[in-house]
Image (cartoon, rainbow, N blue to C red; front, side, top):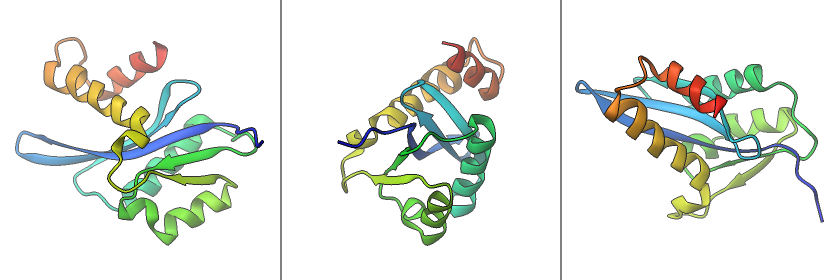
Length: 138
Protein backbone atom coordinates (compact mmCIF):
# COMPACT_ATOMS: atom_id res chain seq x y z
CA UNK A 1 0.00 0.00 0.00
CA UNK A 2 1.36 3.39 -1.02
CA UNK A 3 1.78 6.02 1.71
CA UNK A 4 0.92 9.52 0.48
CA UNK A 5 2.81 12.68 1.37
CA UNK A 6 1.05 16.02 1.23
CA UNK A 7 -2.55 15.94 -0.01
CA UNK A 8 -4.12 19.03 -1.55
CA UNK A 9 -7.61 19.68 -2.88
CA UNK A 10 -7.95 22.50 -5.43
CA UNK A 11 -10.80 24.24 -7.17
CA UNK A 12 -12.04 27.49 -8.68
CA UNK A 13 -14.87 29.37 -6.96
CA UNK A 14 -17.06 32.03 -8.53
CA UNK A 15 -18.67 34.97 -6.74
CA UNK A 16 -20.45 38.09 -7.97
CA UNK A 17 -19.62 41.19 -5.91
CA UNK A 18 -20.92 44.64 -6.89
CA UNK A 19 -22.02 43.28 -10.31
CA UNK A 20 -18.48 42.01 -11.01
CA UNK A 21 -17.85 38.30 -11.48
CA UNK A 22 -14.75 37.16 -9.55
CA UNK A 23 -12.97 33.80 -9.75
CA UNK A 24 -10.76 32.52 -6.96
CA UNK A 25 -8.45 29.52 -7.15
CA UNK A 26 -6.79 27.94 -4.15
CA UNK A 27 -5.19 24.78 -2.79
CA UNK A 28 -6.41 23.30 0.50
CA UNK A 29 -3.88 21.16 2.37
CA UNK A 30 -6.05 18.39 3.81
CA UNK A 31 -3.55 17.23 6.43
CA UNK A 32 -2.66 20.71 7.69
CA UNK A 33 -6.18 22.14 7.19
CA UNK A 34 -4.69 25.29 5.61
CA UNK A 35 -5.32 27.13 2.38
CA UNK A 36 -2.48 28.13 0.05
CA UNK A 37 -2.13 30.04 -3.19
CA UNK A 38 -5.34 32.03 -3.19
CA UNK A 39 -5.57 34.16 -6.33
CA UNK A 40 -8.65 36.14 -7.40
CA UNK A 41 -9.18 37.46 -10.93
CA UNK A 42 -12.02 38.69 -13.11
CA UNK A 43 -11.60 35.78 -15.53
CA UNK A 44 -11.02 32.10 -15.04
CA UNK A 45 -8.79 29.87 -17.09
CA UNK A 46 -5.49 28.07 -16.98
CA UNK A 47 -3.58 31.28 -16.19
CA UNK A 48 -5.54 31.63 -12.92
CA UNK A 49 -4.78 28.03 -11.97
CA UNK A 50 -1.07 28.25 -12.85
CA UNK A 51 -0.65 31.52 -10.96
CA UNK A 52 -2.43 30.02 -7.94
CA UNK A 53 -0.32 26.86 -8.07
CA UNK A 54 2.96 28.79 -8.25
CA UNK A 55 1.88 30.98 -5.34
CA UNK A 56 0.98 27.83 -3.39
CA UNK A 57 4.43 26.35 -4.09
CA UNK A 58 6.06 29.59 -2.92
CA UNK A 59 3.99 29.65 0.29
CA UNK A 60 4.11 25.92 1.05
CA UNK A 61 7.65 24.91 0.10
CA UNK A 62 8.92 21.43 -0.77
CA UNK A 63 6.46 18.57 -1.30
CA UNK A 64 6.91 15.22 0.43
CA UNK A 65 7.32 12.16 -1.81
CA UNK A 66 4.04 10.74 -3.20
CA UNK A 67 2.12 13.99 -2.69
CA UNK A 68 -1.30 14.30 -4.32
CA UNK A 69 -3.21 17.18 -5.89
CA UNK A 70 -6.95 16.46 -6.17
CA UNK A 71 -9.29 18.54 -8.32
CA UNK A 72 -12.61 18.41 -10.05
CA UNK A 73 -13.08 17.71 -13.75
CA UNK A 74 -13.16 21.30 -15.02
CA UNK A 75 -11.24 22.05 -18.20
CA UNK A 76 -8.50 24.00 -16.40
CA UNK A 77 -7.53 20.98 -14.32
CA UNK A 78 -7.73 18.58 -17.27
CA UNK A 79 -5.50 20.79 -19.44
CA UNK A 80 -2.15 19.62 -20.72
CA UNK A 81 -0.43 22.68 -19.21
CA UNK A 82 -1.73 21.92 -15.71
CA UNK A 83 -0.85 18.23 -15.88
CA UNK A 84 2.65 19.06 -17.16
CA UNK A 85 3.27 21.45 -14.26
CA UNK A 86 2.17 18.85 -11.71
CA UNK A 87 4.38 16.22 -13.34
CA UNK A 88 7.36 18.61 -13.22
CA UNK A 89 6.85 18.82 -9.44
CA UNK A 90 6.49 15.01 -9.25
CA UNK A 91 2.94 15.28 -7.92
CA UNK A 92 0.27 12.61 -8.29
CA UNK A 93 -2.87 13.80 -10.07
CA UNK A 94 -6.29 12.84 -8.71
CA UNK A 95 -9.63 13.93 -10.19
CA UNK A 96 -13.21 13.80 -8.94
CA UNK A 97 -15.78 11.69 -10.68
CA UNK A 98 -17.95 13.68 -13.09
CA UNK A 99 -20.89 15.28 -11.27
CA UNK A 100 -19.58 14.40 -7.80
CA UNK A 101 -18.69 17.65 -6.03
CA UNK A 102 -18.49 15.71 -2.75
CA UNK A 103 -15.28 14.09 -4.03
CA UNK A 104 -13.67 17.51 -3.67
CA UNK A 105 -15.45 18.26 -0.40
CA UNK A 106 -12.53 19.79 1.49
CA UNK A 107 -12.06 22.76 -0.83
CA UNK A 108 -15.82 23.03 -1.51
CA UNK A 109 -16.36 23.33 2.24
CA UNK A 110 -13.70 26.01 2.46
CA UNK A 111 -15.38 28.03 -0.33
CA UNK A 112 -18.70 27.78 1.51
CA UNK A 113 -17.21 29.08 4.75
CA UNK A 114 -15.23 31.80 2.95
CA UNK A 115 -18.31 33.10 1.14
CA UNK A 116 -20.44 33.03 4.26
CA UNK A 117 -18.02 34.44 6.83
CA UNK A 118 -15.71 36.71 4.87
CA UNK A 119 -17.87 37.97 2.05
CA UNK A 120 -21.59 37.75 2.91
CA UNK A 121 -21.44 38.55 6.62
CA UNK A 122 -18.24 40.61 6.33
CA UNK A 123 -18.57 42.01 9.82
CA UNK A 124 -15.30 40.92 11.33
CA UNK A 125 -12.75 40.87 8.49
CA UNK A 126 -11.57 43.89 6.54
CA UNK A 127 -10.22 41.81 3.64
CA UNK A 128 -10.14 38.29 2.29
CA UNK A 129 -6.41 38.21 3.09
CA UNK A 130 -7.16 38.94 6.76
CA UNK A 131 -9.76 36.14 6.77
CA UNK A 132 -7.30 33.66 5.21
CA UNK A 133 -4.64 34.61 7.76
CA UNK A 134 -7.05 33.96 10.64
CA UNK A 135 -8.42 30.79 8.99
CA UNK A 136 -4.90 29.35 8.72
CA UNK A 137 -4.18 30.20 12.37
CA UNK A 138 -7.31 28.32 13.43
